[in-house]
Image (cartoon, rainbow, N blue to C red; front, top):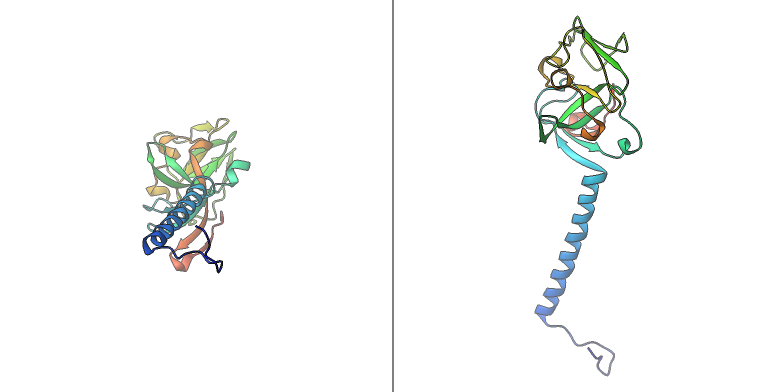
Length: 194
């Protein structure tokens, strides 16, 4: 539009202004959507704990943030709590704890867990916790984790579907590391492996 003699542009009609606002709003939504998708795919993801397999560490209904960056630069470590794809149904996510990493030998004997021949200290569990064997990990059998195999257990050993029943998972099965609990408010904070 040509400016008038006083250097001002003619005023736009109401509908032209409304169209401009709509376009700006749409552009904003697209930009925020792209940022959200990028964060979801590459940086962090929100999860809700469903079930009691990680009691007493996590309870049904806890909300947490899973970070996805660490394992791009390093491998999961003993004791870390991870979110992974359910090996039997990839549309579901599980939350479990890393018990054995590639190269470890793992054994369940007399309700105790042995890694590389030593009973592991699990300070995050009640002292009287007993770990039963399962369909995959049978009593006293020694299993060696392969080059890309991780064994994961739930902290609630009596009520957890985990590697004892369905075997190891790969690094590619792991969504990320449980990083921050934001609900319930009483338990809000960064998550440790203790």
